[in-house]
Amino acid sequence: MGCQFSAKTKAKMNKSDSEVFLEEQIMALEDVAAIQIQAWWRGTLVRRTLLHAALRAWIIQCWWRVAYSRLLDRRRLMVLQLSTRRECAVVKLQAMVRMWRVRRRYLRAQAAVRLIQMRWRNCLTRGFMRGRYQITASGLAMEMQILIS
Image 1 (cartoon, helix red, strand yellow):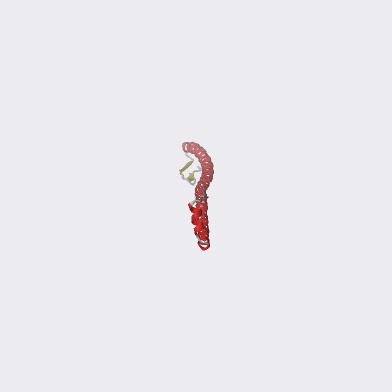
Image 2 (image 1 turned 45 degrees about the vertical axis):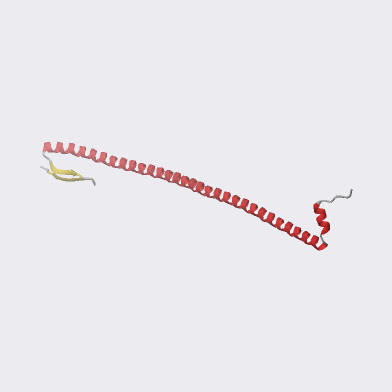
């Protein structure tokens, strides 16, 4: 029995050198095309990964901007409330001081009126003085006539 060859080997033996050379060039071109397709696919995967990473970073940045603006709004609100409380306290203090001063002026005027009324009544019973008086917001207005007999 003789040596048996596979169908491929027999086909190669029957082909000429130029045909073998062409087949090798075709296989080399197919390898180059396969390498180019693989490089394109790897590049696509890398670009997709970078795009997803950039989108995630952008989402985080958007979230941070919103969260930071809310934080600043809360701080502004706290400062505004604090200044409002201080201003309210100052206004209350001013009102209390003004009320105290007006009350003190009123009590002095009331004491003066009582003194004048007491003296007036004493004088009227004796007939020495005549007149009238009127209490206004700015003070006391009096008109008096003293009779000396």
